[in-house]
Image 1 (spheres, rainbow, N blue to C red):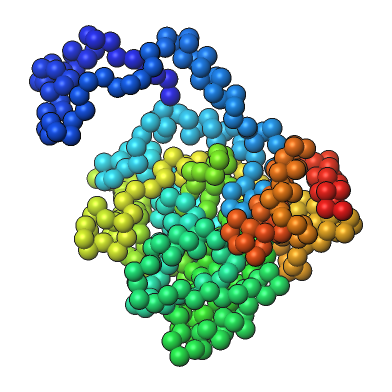
Image 2: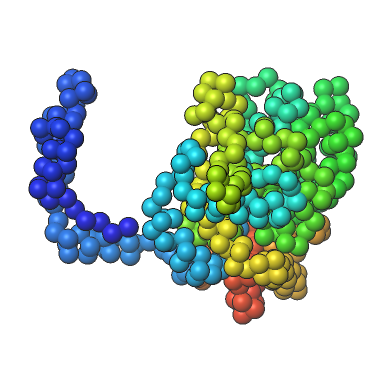
Length: 448
């Protein structure tokens, strides 16, 4: 946002309006022994032209994603963002408004949240969605806490196909609960049904099962079978999703899932060095009073016209204080708006086309690599990313390909040292046939 400095006259006028004699008097409540005295050791102030030149010099040291051809995914994706998303979300009435806490939020913002919730319900096949959370990791952690609260049981079985950083976040959330997380291994790149069935039939079976669709390594999970296994054992199924993939895959709701979370960065939000993201959380109507965050509802005001209100925020820390079962007390309003604009601009067919291009191009890349002797590690179906074995440290492969102009993927050694030779590669609709060919050729040459 543009910056306009205050003049001495401006500061005097503000002090007079609030009844304070000096700026220093505003800090009298701070004990003198912890108040800083004297001058900060800062360099001499620059003029505006000097400051602008200095800022440009610093920014020139940054590397833009635009300068590399991106084949990295792992939860943050390089999708095309229609200009209408920036245009509408950049309007001052949206861009400058802070996330609403109470019902005095403007009708425009509330309607945008209502539309967002509706779109998320349609995507996920669920009946209720909240007005967004922080990101995919915290959304899944909140979904796990919610499921534990519903099941009245702390034990959780979680697939090894869940994003490692999501798992780390969940561990942080539940670290002081008595029941540990039980990890379910993968078989051929997807959750092992045999291992899950064994866990659910054990002496102390988990009452919450957590999977990701598609999973972190790209594999498409058999959600219907996993749901059936969970429900037959009296457990709830929580699914973390990539919303773009849901344009092609059967929705979690259709598969019988109980709670759906996800990362919606792919819906009109730039990668931006890995954040900020947008957390999705949706569930069945019968669990509506267990969902954290806020839900915007539609009603009619005293003149009979349509109006929007904050219907529920029952589990929020700022409402229930020490009785709250979630610390959530805000949402990512601006990013939820961007997702709403993106989905509205593309429509059902547009989103399906994006998803189709993603999977087609990923399979084109896999076929080219296979011709050069580099095959996906697993044979399970995948959406837009898959794992390859580099035969040596994948991080070195990434560094070498960076010099050739490619962001080659995500080295899995950063999450698991035993997988240091493995690389997670990804394509989106952004990648051209020529870029895919050139990347495949460069990668094959490097791995020979």
